[in-house]
Amino acid sequence: MGSIGSTFVALADDGRLFGLDPQLLFDAAITAINVFVLFLLLSFILFNPVRNMLKKRQDKITSDRENAEADKRQAQALKQEYEEKLKAARQEAESILSEARRVAKHNEQKIVDEAKQEAARIIARANTEAELEKQKAADEVKQQIIAVSQLMAAKVVAASINEADSQRLIEQTLNEMGENTWLS
Image (cartoon, rainbow, N blue to C red; front, side, top):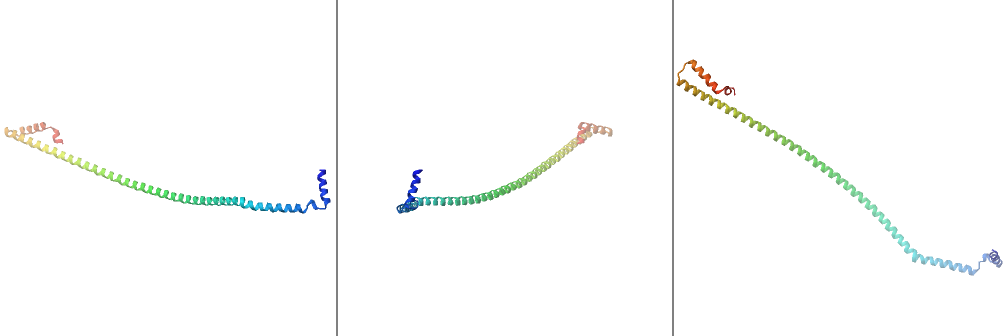
């Protein structure tokens, strides 16, 4: 520490302020100019390309962000369009189902009506057949009555009989035919 203090004292003894001489100031000025020139050179050689690269990167990020926002808007528009199409498709499906229900109801009613008509035809046919069977039975009864009458006439002619014999003969013939013939 003694040597440093003596240097300051020695410099101060010289009469120069802080030991600054013109050579030192000139060297400091040259060094400052060299640093400034070096700064300018490095600025053109290194800093400008870095600045350009950063500017390009910033532009790219800005462009990417704008593209992302545009894509987001486009996606929102597509989403809305698809939702509208989905809504329209649902409405169309509901319309188709409604139409199918209406057609099914109509077909159901048509089938029921046809079944009723068929049942009415079957009943009418059964009634017709029953009438035919009744008519046939009535015809058979008439045939039997005619046969009985002929048989009685033949017996009356064959044996001229009296009234008591005639009544007995009718009762005998009726008993032979049976009571069911007359009841139906």
